[in-house]
Image 1 (cartoon, helix red, strand yellow):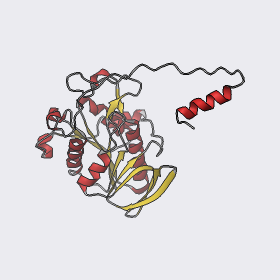
Image 2 (cartoon, helix red, strand yellow):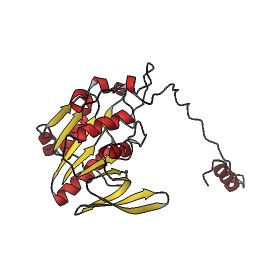
Image 3 (tube, helix red, strand yellow):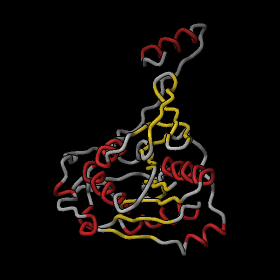
Image 4 (cartoon, one colour):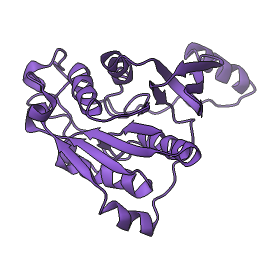
Length: 257
């Protein structure tokens, strides 16, 4: 079984995320960069499936040169090889363009299953997995919390409001996973050293046959942005015998109960 896992390098959750004043795109140099946590869980899911059924894991990312760091971490976890889609002309691409570029990159591989995170922790559109499945002509199972393969069938538990649904699809397919799927393994020293020798294929716009990409050709753009207002201090409840009532009224007003 050959599995492609999409990963994305994103600003560290604990870093302040800054948009550029010129075009409102994310200033990726302003924060520490890490592999997206949900994507690391996608890599773990792929590694477990290959350990059970054989095959290989290819990690795929789109991003600047710096994104190679995240590819190397996934390779250190145990992935076999990597594809890095990078080109200055792709800077500022929206979800539509990103899905087109990633679909073209995956098209260079022969895979039975594509695994993605259900959304990135920076853009959070949650739309790329479905766009990618449509472009690749694959059945998709989204928001998955557990995953197994039975012959040519992928079986999954799909998270929904108030519970989950059991879903099956025929391979090849695309699955997006949530943070509930597993706990990713930490790369060991042996894995880190081995990752340095694993192959990373670099593809640009010309290699992928794309003719219009990047911010200038994006279908969606950010027109304006403003800093998040400072957090206000909370409401203090003094228990003079009516504390329970006050707390209940406060929660009800905030629609928390």
